[in-house]
Length: 124
Image: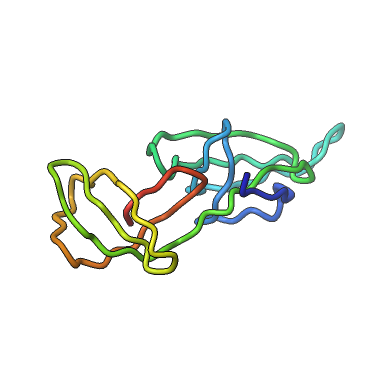
């Protein structure tokens, strides 16, 4: 698995974090002061990178959390067939099949940028 551990206090808005075993981008990060009997807490709200569902968690700031390593890659559209398209990775020349996003109208020879985490891919 392409992920590493970080402390919650090292997270920032716009970075990635694993929430409920799903890679998410952080939309909101806030901390509460340490109280009389406890440590400082952080509340993190995020949105799934590949499924766009909102998720959140609250943890002590010194707790460890998994951070996914998401690759940003370049590809070239080879062919389009309905809702699917064949994309060639411009680095490895591997051909992959991806779903066409609703707001994207690809044609052959278009270059695009996509995110990849393990076997999940999404056009940016």
